[in-house]
Image 1 (cartoon, one colour):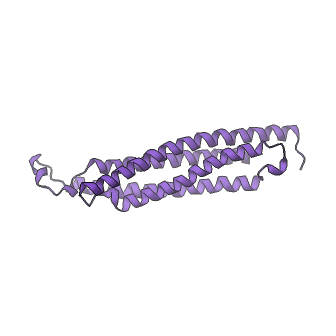
Image 2 (cartoon, helix red, strand yellow):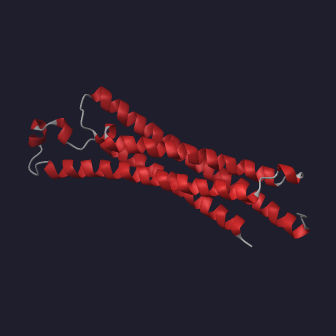
Image 3 (cartoon, rainbow, N blue to C red):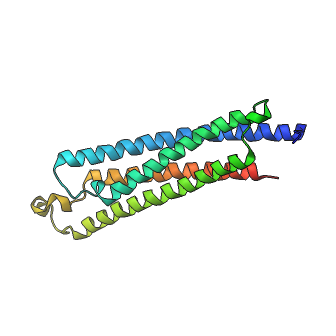
Length: 191
């Protein structure tokens, strides 16, 4: 295949789009992922040292939250890989450039990773919010003195809300990665 001037200009624009989108997506996902991971670890370890055992942060919701964070780690790697693709696309040696098929496969894989990550994280959020709703509905609605006599596992704790926040940050990070991947897919699919 002979590369003409317009092909070269288009290739340069796609390379720049991959680099810029990759870096923006990488850093946004990394920051949100680190914050989510930190919050989740804090909630889990605080729960273990606090003594109560029915915090949703250590159960079903935390399992899916961690699974969503693992998927996010893969997404962060793929965002970094976009930056490398951008550099390779500008190579003066055509043999060093990734093929369009390979590039499309990586972008499609990233879309799937972020969709699965969002699903896992949303399942974790639903489990956590369901537990919080159950706790709030089973609390007596009269007087503060009654709360002193309740089992602490029936009271909504601030650690419960931390798990919800961690899930929200992770979903946001997956959304950023998904938008970046869809935009790049659209960019490389232009005729």
